[in-house]
Image (cartoon, rainbow, N blue to C red; front, top):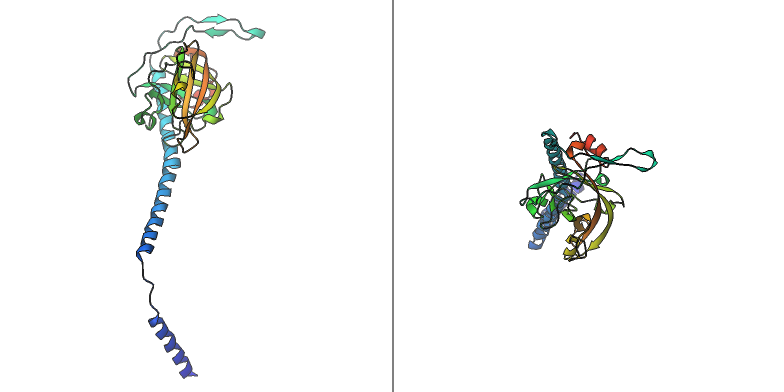
Length: 272
């Protein structure tokens, strides 16, 4: 019995030695490199589109709250006398602060104010700065840009702004969730400007007429105070744009505190 077992063992060892090892080919090496590179690219995209997006969103919101605190800590400027207007059904009279204050056009990348949109979440606030270039839209502290040559908050015409839909903080990620009547509130050093969402439309990237004083009607004199929010569509693409419109409702100076439309989320943010 010992001899046959020794022969089998020797035979197995001989076959093992005789069996050639597989050789690495250029194609195989290239395939491994491409596979590894693909994994790295996917990981980078995940970081860029989700993790980095979340980090920038938090940074931009924190900076906006700091800006509100800075304004609140300043000596309040005297506001114009408030008139009252009777309300139906015995409701408390509404204050009328007169025509909204309209600030001059700032220099590029200078701060205009903060954007508060409750529909985007109780913790949503972003800072609006002049210009729509990457130094504004990709900034860790800004994120929303004001189109040059469009009107300022509270002015007759179109206050038009832009932000990314995804990545770099995704300032207008939920723009398609807006519902008619939703408040879109702009806070500036002078006060608060309340707009109400009316409608949105999907347009080509070349549709600059949405920035006209009367959106989609270039050359028509403006008679209303409007806001237009623009961003890319669909998500993770620049194939088209969404333009969301709002109509001006009211304004009040900083000394009057935040308007009822955002009072709760402003208080919850700890900036008062």
